[in-house]
Length: 378
Image (spheres, helix red, strand yellow):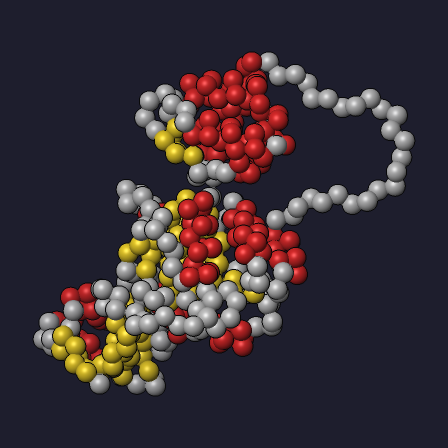
């Protein structure tokens, strides 16, 4: 046991605890290890008595403290009358690299087939891309362990991804995106509890996808993503559960994506075999589009990409002018881009360099899907 000088953030946490204890509510939740949650830690009442146990995380992300307090001590700390507390200190940051303990593990749901033991790099690429598509219309969360048992949680929605490192050589961390964004979205974690994810924590999927692949192999995100030494308090306890503990709670994960639930998440629309018949009809051709139709197609395309956070428009030309610029490319190569990935990649680069487009996060594959969906009005 050791003595810790009560930090300001922990004292503020205790004030919030006292406020909850004093609030009139006969159904208060006290007897849970995370009954109280704060950015700096969590805690709750133990043994149904007046004793409480809290976990506090230092601001530098290096240490975790387990602190036992009575209700009187909580109130004294809250009032500033007690400046020290006795607790047990644990190191969060590892001092040496660990040897690989197995294959990377990916989990995206509560069922046994919502997991993949990653045997090949290409399998992980397939799994992550499927989960990105799965999160196009609703926020989703995934959990990953590296070969060395580093652990993270990622919240994915609309082509953006927030990454929370629970365990790694450098301790816990959160990805940082656009600090100017003050809004957030809500996703259910693996326990079914709502997790509030600030958009400022999210980065575009192409960057996040590369970082997740790197984390699986090396336990770190790489230089493309800036991080801060913090994570939501709700996720802190996940660091207590390593990969072996998780595997002991579930059936053996699939070793190939096709044996997991991934094929059911985003239907591929693979055609079924039909009896051969003689085609006596004329080939069906699409009606030719007029120049105004290409402008309308371009506008629908930009609006769809924007709704999925796959494009950011900047200052300068408005949507009408951008759509007019893009309509020429669609008239020349739009239909071909729907079917040829190289042409779709070329078109993505043209959109990215267009006046009025600040950033384009869509890949050629993303663009192909959007082109097919927006070619004709709904």
